[in-house]
Image (tube, rainbow, N blue to C red; front, side, top):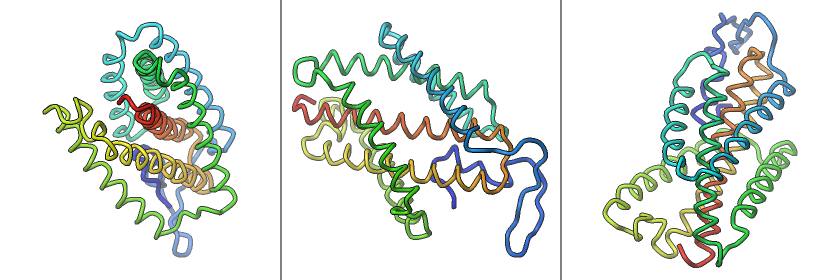
Length: 253
């Protein structure tokens, strides 16, 4: 059961760096050293988000760092995604940079929508937490099952969304939606944001499945950093989509 999060896709037996053995029709990794546990994932995720939160306070106080932090975080994200062996230092550096970016972005939204949506940031944070808890419950209770059909539908939706997002970005350079691209075009922008929130939420389910499978397959303990990084990417995406959606509902974007 593979996650569609590009970070967690690497967490397979082949990525663990060990040899493999055949057991019936399944290929199992042979791994030396400590094995991954749920406690490892929780601890590493907590550490990463504590650093991200600290960075957010810096970004909120110094919004001028927002765009620098964005490009730094983007570079670190790609470095982590394409690095075969997970690097705790790179993951933590990403958390710090992304935190500064989110803090600055949140401050910009809070300032721009101070009158029409004074609680925009707190609502986006609460919405992110509620979505996380809801999707975790739905996954753990087997209400949502990650099977072949689910993955195919999710992949088609993701590819479609990414194509539209890229087209929106390009159109924004030509003044479409007053610089917001398709997101600034009335009801279309609202639909795109709702689609983004839905896809980010279902991406959490794929991440949960990948964590479960990695633990079951005996991934090395160090892979907990990759799992934490994957969750961070999804939650950052979800939070930014909620920020934009609430802003649109305020009637000013």
